[in-house]
Length: 412
Image 1 (cartoon, rainbow, N blue to C red):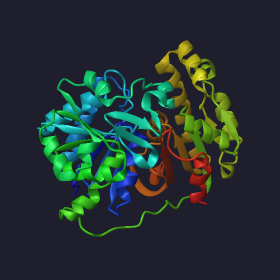
Image 2: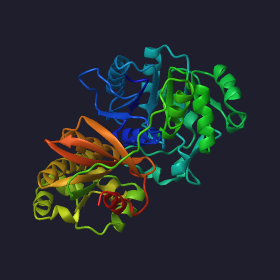
Image 3: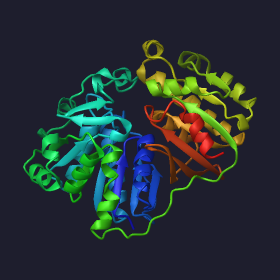
Image 4: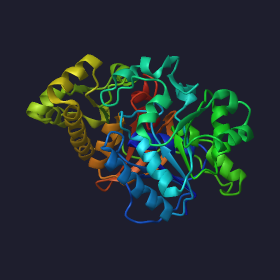
């Protein structure tokens, strides 16, 4: 029976959250889409949706369906997880989904805190920083689907919601959980909360642990298992996170065009094939499929559409933003199935939209969360096509330059 239910707006974000919760030693169940049954054997349930850039009405509908399922597992505390770079369009979907969940839960207010200090994300005076750069000056300004051109979370959130947006700043957080709880009780419906260090997140989690709904990046939820143990809601049993035990074949699939993923692709030494969205739109992915068919899965080939911002803009200009992304997702999803059928049992995927497309194509419905490769990126075990496989779903900006080799080396 679950005590905590989370809804994530993309698949890499869901594995990120699940991996941080699993650090506590508690069992974490990660569902791909809303399950058909209502059974749960884990205290922490995470539902991965693919709604970050979906139409607002669709995103809200899917999130409410997930909430209903989570309620059915027994969960009474809920979390809406979005990216630590607050990825969103001008319309949403962070704010609209939050308001819909609040209404369904009868919540008067909720907090917003995408900070993830371990990965260089911090919020100060309501402004989001990526490392030492304001969000709008970071590589996120060139994101192909959700370019972030403002660093101020109140200005970003305001147009997405119907009720007042406010701020509780770092000075209040530094006074401790009791002072923060008092400030939250007087705050408007949508409250951005500063955090620049893990200690701040623990204070925010402690102050808000009894709220019907909290929202934020994965790191805000990380202190919750310890707080639930402290409150007697979670037993003291813990298990060590392990890595999936699967066959040796491997493939790397990268659709992300983030600055870090570009560096990771450049650093990877395996056989490589680069996808071109314009070629995919005109000719399909046959050339990539033929190339992959000749590869030894033991050498872990990589297929990637990762490109510099100017190349992405050129493809979007000719194909349209949505279509440029769709042709890449469709190709990498089909190639993932082909690689599995050729013997790949270790599949590393870079990019949130790509991870969603690949996971759905593989027919995966549940992931067992294992050991982290890098902060927020665990290896996960699952079944696809009757085969046990290991999946690593990496958000574009996460991991070191050696991430792909590090991931595969962990399972060597």
